[in-house]
Image (cartoon, rainbow, N blue to C red):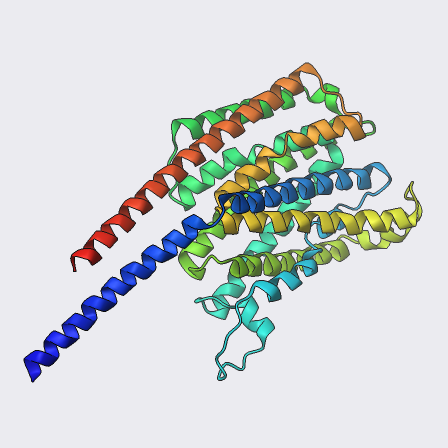
Length: 388
């Protein structure tokens, strides 16, 4: 009886393997049958949301300073204070659990649904949140002292910094296309620096312009460091990258950044001048409040687009798209703020676009290589299961 039972068990195991192979093939077939245009439609919507939110947040931030706003810490605070609008997404996308023994509140499970300890997550969120606070403060100084067009083109240097930080923290290799992008973006920033004297906004001293220039470059480096640290945190500590986990990261770090901005607002005593600032705002008190509210909402709208692109494709692609949209802002600045688009600035913008395309093409090559490797691995696995 025992040999017969062994043969029976072996036949069952073979049938199970064949069923698994068949189910895997059916899953792949169902994925292939899914309309591709639906995926492209989602990605296109996320790109439009990201670019529109980013452009609106930048322009509204400049309007705040143009119309009488002067608090750098308030401008820093509104860049992260709109995170509560993301909470409904957190509860909507977090997968429900059927375990009756898990009595942890749903909101707590949503915020800490990772394999890492709470202490590790707390240190990661606090560290990255404080980095965002300093980064947003430098962006505020840059936006207050520079024309919008110059500011946005300088922000494009974040791709060059991203390549450097990714090389040291994320093991990304330098390729000819990335080096080409780095050189072009550096030349673009240098051209803007040479053109500094004719680009100073009215009422801005040369020293303030230099401070704004340096702060914007520093903020671009800080943002690139933030992206690399987030990627490193997911790879080394959190070890999960679902939509809800990425959303957790954004909400928690934004909460820390908002608290840090409030501390800076009170420590600098700028809060004492907010009442007079609102009364003296050229467009009125209501317009002052609406500007701050919609600035906060705009940055969070761009965050939704960013999270969607991270979930659908990758964080690198999201960064490329976000930076690719920066040349759109100088065009809008010439329309709404009448910024001058002189020859040097046009050349700087064209060089920046060339750098974007070079960086984007390298990402496209990496994506093709990744898909090719995954396909070969899946085929090898299927062959091995078939031989079994």
